[in-house]
Amino acid sequence: MLRSALLAASRSPQVRTVVEKFPPTHAIVERFVAGERLEQAVAATDELVATGRTVTLDHLGEDTRDAAQAADTALAYEHLLTALKETGLAASAEVSVKLSAVGQFLPVDGEKIALENARRICQAAADAGTTVTLDMEDHTTTDSTLSIARELREDFPWLGVVLQAYLRRTEADCRDLATKGSRVRLCKGAYKEPESVAFQGKQEVDLAYVRALKVLMGGEGYPMIASHDPNMIKIAGQLAEWNNRGRDSFEYQMLYGIRPEEQLRLAGEGNTMRVYLPYGQEWYGYFMRRLAERPANLVFFLRAMATR
Ligand code: FAD
Image 1 (tube, rainbow, N blue to C red):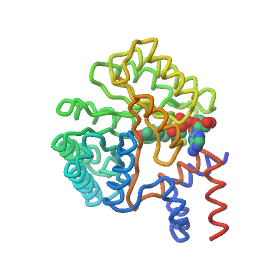
Image 2: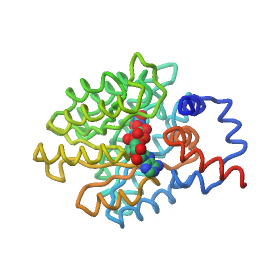
Image 3: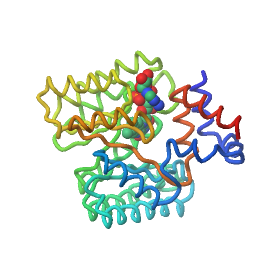
Image 4: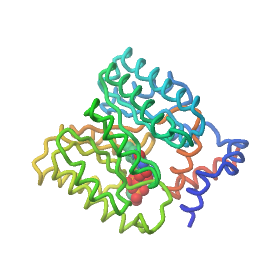
């Protein structure tokens, strides 16, 4: 109930206006977001890399309805990738892109514009010597995102995509994508989805995650296990063993600010541990989804608001 309300709020312009009028203190947002500026994102990346972790950076933004803003987002990614190249961080840091931030929802030629902008970002990543992963948004975008990914992979075969275990279709998508060279990030899914397309309960979603993970770990691609769930992490380790996977043939991923000790433990064991690091001014949707995921995050938020 609470999760649904928060996820609905994450997409509500009215609630957004209210929250942005009384923004949470910096300390709260900074728990999940590296900062608003590029330099802050680069500094946070540097710190994570110094502790043996790798990074995927997200220039915050989504649901763009303006072509100029979509182009600006692509430009921001180009600047970011140049900075990663110049600082030598590109060897350990890639970028994550939401297609809705680069034009997918524009009423005219949305998909075409998103493809062109994503292509610019992929080219900048190739020039910097790193990679891109396309985030996955709500289920209405899955086909479009996978089709854009297919097209981009013809020129950029290292392009990663995200699949969400809560979607009923995902096990089949995993089978399609568990091929040589294919990078797939498996997460549980963060949006409010109807029962017709998505499993609803935690147990059902967890079981679906394990089924999807079995397909990916048994396949020929490069699985990216994006979860903070101790059970999923343990099962991933077991599946890697059963499938004789070396530590360089898959990776773990977690969000910035969540379970940092566990991130360090996994990295310390010789695994690739990638931290998803968001930065920028458009923190609202991302922040609200994090609150929806975990009641403790909401309590932390409300307590801090009460003591402002
Ligand atoms: P949950 O079921 O939320 O949590 C399970 C258990 O994990 C908890 O019981 C607890 O033991 C532990 N845990 C979780 N959070 C915390 C915490 N804050 N502190 C301590 N323990 C905790 N979603 C999308 O829809 N599209 C995307 O493109 C996408 N990209 C992602 C990229 C990355 C790298 C990650 C990590 C997540 C991404 N997500 C994305 C979000 C994802 O779908 C989930 O909403 C989110 O990760 C929470 O699911 P979970 O697997 O951590 O498990």
